[in-house]
Image 1 (cartoon, helix red, strand yellow):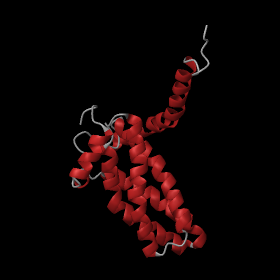
Image 2: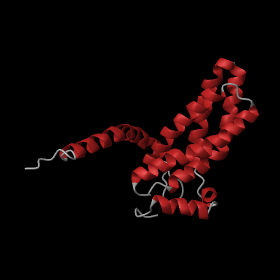
Image 3: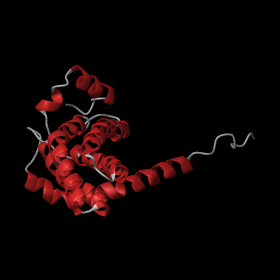
Length: 192
């Protein structure tokens, strides 16, 4: 996929070829997501007792082990889409809608006691982790397939990627602010 790939082209490809997500199933995303989210559900349900917390944790672990690879494949599909901000918005909203609709159903059927706390925590985590994954994938990390590197190489890069991701937002806002302050405000120009 080239840098000229647009968000619209990626969306069309995913709709036209739903098996793309199966062929590009991202095992790195599935592994990381299963472990981290199982911990979130354990912590969110601990107030209901350790058995309820353990059951919620195992439910989430299995659910994410089965599905997170598809969501990782979807994020990876957008990694070269331009403009970057549009790709970020699409994955930040598209993935949580797809992911958490099914997640809610699974946990309602399972009887997870602290479902609201669990899902709110999970949705916030999804928004942040999806943006981080897109950021890392745009830089070649956490990618599977021919373009991907080893897990060891990805892990070595993670500290630098986390720092870069953390400062990317403030730097973008500063650049936007600086660009806006260089232009005179509309309607206040001198008429002389």
